[in-house]
Structures are given as structure tokens and as C-alpha cells.
Image 1 (cartoon, rainbow, N blue to C red):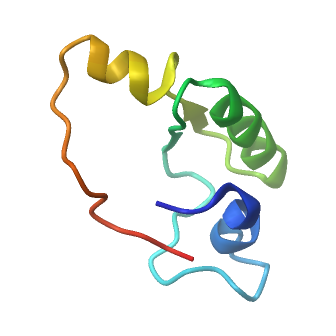
Image 2: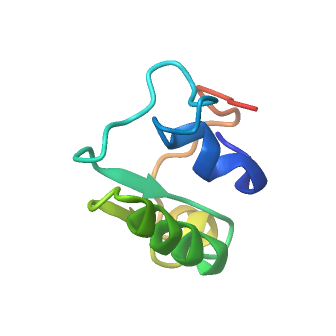
Length: 80
């Protein structure tokens, strides 16, 4: 999980503050938020940075869980 306020500079390999193991510009990035609104804007901003395959989860986490998909109580990776 990456906080929205730091998303771009933690992923952008040219920022000097990219996280270890950050995705490359050709990797698929799926941004997820609670309801799907903020993630749409974040995916758009990542595309503008050059992450061509950035997208978001339509309906966000709430819709994903409501559709009966598996949910893990804690994130597997947190980046600050």
C-alpha cells in the first residue's frame, strides 16, 4: 500500500525517492481505493508520468468485496 500523497514520487524511477522494487514504465499497475474515485485520478496521473499500463479497480475495494472476492485483513506490503 502506498499513501496517495506520495504515490508518484515513490513509483517514479526518476524521482530519487522511488521505493525498492518499484514497477517499471511498462509494468501493469492497478490502483485501488475505497470506492474507485481517487484511484481513477491516481491512475491517470501515473499514466501522465509514463506508466502506460496504469489503471484502477472500477468500484474500488467496496465493490470488489461486495462481489464476493477474497479479502485479506492486512496489506501484504506497505510503503511510506
